[in-house]
Image (cartoon, rainbow, N blue to C red; front, top):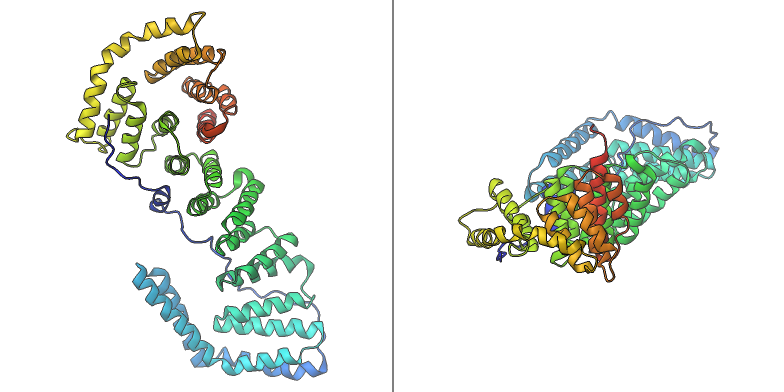
Length: 461
C-alpha cells in the first residue's frame, strides 16, 4: 500500500493560491457626478446659513492648502494600492489615514459652517440642501462620514426623485460598508433593493455586509439567492466568494453547494480543482467514495499536487484495481508530481504490477459470474468495477445495470459508477439522469459528476 506522506493543502489554501479574494466583495465607489436637484424653496431662517456654508466651500476648493491636502491624500491612496506585503500596506494605510485627518483639519472651519446649516434647516427643502452641502464637503475632503451623512439627509428629506432613491441608498450602503458599519450597510442595501435598484452587484454587497459582520450563514443565503436570480450570468467571483466563506465558516453543505455551482457555470480546470478540493475536505469520505471523486479529478485533469495522486492510488488500492493504480502512478510521474525513487511510489508500482496479469485474466470469469441468473448484487458490481477500472465503460455499464436489479444492491454506489460509465461513453443525458438519483453521502460527488457530464454535452465555445 501507498504510505501517504503529504499533508493536505486545504481547499481554502488552494482557493487563495488561485487568487480568490479572502476579503469582501468591493464596496461601490462614491459617485462623482452631482445629481440634478429638484425644485426647492429655502426658508428664510436657513438661507443665511446656506449662503455662508456654500460660499465657504466654494472658496475652500480654491485654497492652496486644500489643493495640497487633496493631492497628498490622492498620492497616499495610490501608494496604498501599489504597496506590496503587509508591513508596506500597513504603513501606507497609516499615511493615508493621517493625510485624510490632516485635510479634515484644514477644512474644519467649513465643517462648522455645514453643521450650522444643518442646525438651521427646518423644512424638507432645507434638509435636502443641507445634505447637499455635507456631500460637497465630504467630496472635497474625502470624508466618507460627511458624504454618507449628506446622502442620508437628502434621502430622509423626501425630496430625492423616486427614480433615484435606490441609487442614493446604494451609495449610502457603500459608504457605510467602507466605514465598517455593516448593519447600516445592510439597511441601506436593502432599501436600495426595495426601491428597485439592481446595478453594481447590490445583492452580493448585501450578502457581504452580513459575511463581513460574522454572519456567514445569513450572508450565504442572500448570496445564493442573488446567484439564483442572475442564473447563468451570475459572476464567477460571487460563487467563489460563497465557497471561501462557507469553507472558512465550516458550513459543509453550503461549501459543497457553491462548489457545484462553480463548475456548473464555469467548468475550467482551476475551478474543478477548487471544487473537488472543497468537497474532499468538507465531507468525510471512505475509500470507495474517495475513489469516485478522484476519478473525476483525473477526467478533468485538475490535479494540483502530489497529494492528489497519492490519494487516488490509495483509494484504488494497487492490490484491488492494479491497472487503474498503475495508470495514476504513470500520470503522476509524467506530471513531475511523483518520483520513481520515492519508496511509496515504487512499492505501489511493484504491488500493482505483480497483480496485473492475474487481474486481467479474471475479467472474463467476473463477467460470466455477473451475468449468471443467480448472481448477487455484489458479484455483478464487482464485475462492473473491474471493467470500469480498465476503461471498458460499455461492459461496466451493462454489469452495473444488472447489479441494480438484484436484492441488497448498494444503490448510491452503483448509480454513481453507472453514471461514470455513461459519461465515459458520451451518454451525457443518461448520465445526468442517473446522477440525479444518487442520495446520501455520495450526493455531492454525483452533483459534481453531473456538472462534468453536462459540460461534455455542451457545444464547444
